[in-house]
Image (cartoon, rainbow, N blue to C red; front, side, top):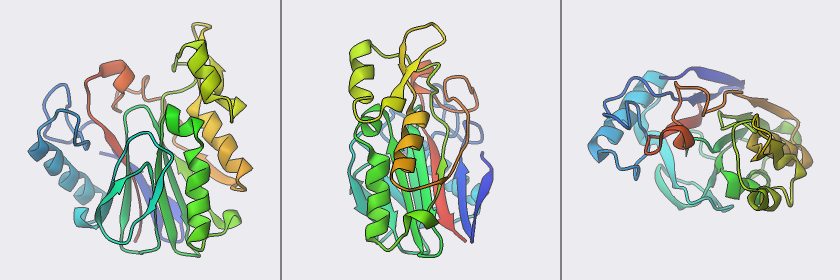
Length: 239
């Protein structure tokens, strides 16, 4: 289903994959996304199974109603935190989730301050620098930028993510690193490069990434490759 990644000081992260669930095509099989057209019962069963496999209780999880915004909310209890694309918590018992199928998951922690965060940075969120908003929200809750560790999940790469020239220009207006050239020689967007640049500009240097392209990696869901399809989750939590 996915491997647990040690981010240090008791902080864990994980990215789920496609196999290991009960959803039927085209959502096969470990679809964790409600609102995809899949059976609600199947998605909830998949979420329970994924959490058990990764070693935490699904009832600890915070879920966002993601809408490609740059809004960040603070979670004080498990369950639905509301409509946003970034969430921060200081509760040590909560698990934060970011859903994706080509967009970039952002997981962040200041373990010393006890602040965890997760975001969903799609093209619109990247254009609006949601990753910067996430870091600012963490600092407001007591984190220090030089103590923050960030893990960037799988996303469609800049060599695959073709967009029209006008969309590329809008996405790269604030962050020039967002502009890429695809393998076909057309205009593209590189969300991983853009968000990395945004985080460094915000003072965060400890950044690692999954490195996989969702469109090229068939073990992951990709909306551009397979729509309609499911969603994988990137989780961050403390032991």
